[in-house]
Amino acid sequence: MRPFFKTWLTICLLMPLAAHATNREQRLPNVNGYTPKSHVSAPSSKNKQTAKQPTSLSKANSKLVPPMATKESSNVLSRAVNVLGTPYRWGGSSPSKGFDCSGLVKYAFNDATFDLPRTSNAMASGHGEKVERGDLKPGDLIFFNIKSRRVNHVAIYLGNDRFIHAPRRGKSVTIDTLKKPYWESHYVVAKRVLPKEKNSLQVVQR
Image (tube, rainbow, N blue to C red; front, side):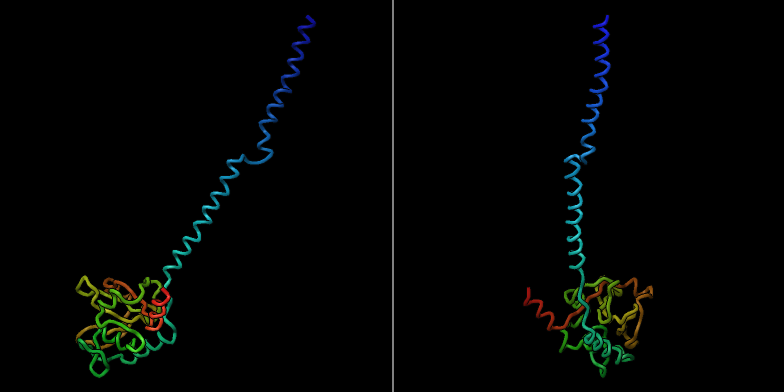
């Protein structure tokens, strides 16, 4: 019985040691840190996030439109405000003969500095850079469609939701506000016009 007892005792003593050794080997990865897979995947996800950020920033920057120079916008607004009260006249583009909406814009922007088409629809279609309503600056052009699907009215933005325009027959050059439901419902788009010199420089750079 003694040899059997020794064998049994040896087995009983070795089994905890073997179990301890096995547990120690299983815990080794936890002591040394993350497994290679987890160690590699964590930085890669961060790298993906950092790689996306410059792209989003570039998209945001590409949408920014430079404002008109302060002196130029002041000149435009001054010329427009100085003819407040001038009667509306279809086809008119001078203080002596009266103004229609696009005639007032042409007069205020001065053809010597800015090259604008004659009609509001042509101004809206292919002239200037489009700006969001929340980014409007004094001197921007705002366009409306009145009793039509096409743009057929233009005004000059003054700031604080106000604009100056030549409304219609029987009215005079006046200041109005975008907060009125009528103008809000007919608002179409806004454009920022740059002087001839800047436009020509942009063409050369391209």
